[in-house]
Image (cartoon, rainbow, N blue to C red):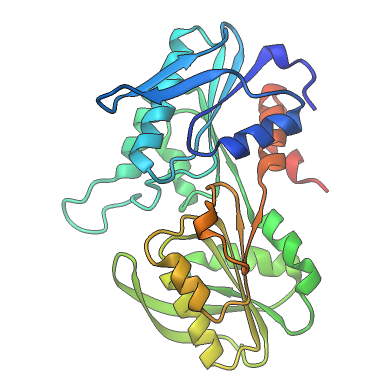
Length: 316
């Protein structure tokens, strides 16, 4: 626990204040004072309520919906801290929006993840602390240090009590195989893969199930759930192939559009997500369980402040 809170400042925007407050609580002090609002024409207004001169400043802000508004808040808060002579500024972004736009999928497409990385750097951030980017290589889009945390340890520890001889981890697509394999190794269980194709964004078609899932308890592992098409259609395919029980987990609960209704109507027994994105009351279902990343981010912030290695935060 950091006991010298006068040397470190944690500010929160409007995207996930509950998580930011919990992170500060784990570190043993309160959030720093800040006013984040809007002028009458909609422009974002920021005022730091206390000095940051020479301090280690951490700005906690997920770039979740409303994505552009939360991103602007992050940029303006960072600029305010830089102009107030902060010693070092770390942008703590539990959920990094625009991460799926990390390549040119078609001619004349932008690479928006790189653009956002450049903007965050230009605003004055000295380093970025984030979790489970859609593609790990996005770290290379930044010209500043990036500490990339993983939600997998929190998720597989939760499912350890369910992992018996009939348990199997399922990758929802080929791109998630490495993530699913890591969880399967930790749970000491086999793995299956859902072979799918994506005709266009937010639409999928399940083609085949690679692996034996009949009579098994299946755990679908993904990095995020957006419209829930992937996870729900995958669950239906597993059910059609004789799966006895189906669980799902993901780091980021984007849950946009028809996601909540799809999950409610699905054959998924339980969906476990992390609180990198706040889950409002209207999106809470009995089958959705939320685990907190506050302790993990608090340890990471402490290690950054003390210049300690990040691998230590996963010990134990």
